[in-house]
Image (cartoon, rainbow, N blue to C red; front, side, top):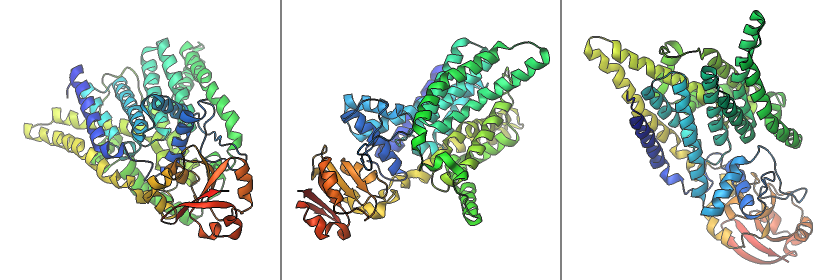
Length: 500
């Protein structure tokens, strides 16, 4: 395995170039494919920061329903706001946002390499482990999809690096690093605060030692204060916004509604036979993962044992899965991104074991067998990621595709029919985000035919000038026809009217 720094840097850059090449067709795709509704919502945050309100505490979406206010506060929109600042300079093209998210993923990979080095893996082994994380199908797919989870994962990985670096070196600046990145992870997506269990375990271990010796361990005080001080801003944000999450299933998890036995079995079956083996992992890394679990490589250079902290990560991620069992279900695989760090530390341990066997086995012919396995893993991982995920960007995998098929087909014409800054009324869009994103219009959005013709008058008073409708049941009612001025466009089953 290479040890020279320039070879490691070259290998890392080659892996990024391979990722960029495999993702090349996706960089310019609009929001389509799997989980496009959440990406559309994220991009509406970005667009509103660019065009209408650049206050980072005012994340806005497209619809003004209910209170005539399009504020929607979930996670702290640090990623969305940052992308908006770049788009102010480079333009509002999709490739700018996707590239930013991809670079965030690359930053997380650099942190993972440093984390592996801090765990005493040799440079070459650490590079291989980082490469395999990069081509985990889950990471590969989402590293170019515009979700705040990408920033949260990258920050969480850097938090782990600074934690283990502090456990080894005890340097104050490492406390600053771990606190800052834990704050960033929690702000970008609250569940990633679970990584803080590593600091908690450290404190508990040394409190136990202190209680036996009767001496105060100042390292414990420093780690504890770093966590509390840096998590306080995240606490303030979520204390302010979470009371408005009344309909968000994440808040209640399994306590909101218990699934029946058949549903639980279906979720378990999909998780066990698809998501874990083919999304978090891939067939290429099954063997090194198994080796990492059952016969991990030695840590001869380690000055400390990382096992309690790795087991803490295993515990907290599975606890999170259990608490969010119904919400994650069989679809929301990106909720499982926190599993990746410990899983690919385990994969790296398996790779190290293969390398050790290649150095120790005799006769010489047998030494080539573990090396051949490592080469097969390195070749198979990107192939698996590409093959397993390439179809998920297809438009047919988009949320609401059947209802919004003609919006996808006639997107350009529907967008051009009305000025982008016009306020419109849209129906029907069950996602409340996708239709308006594809036509780049803000306004009032409805997911069914319950809209009353008389409501058009009120929305018109609040600035709505046009109606986009996929419902003949609604727009052919006399009460609607008497409120429209003219039909501007009919594209598939979508009609665009100018209101009187």
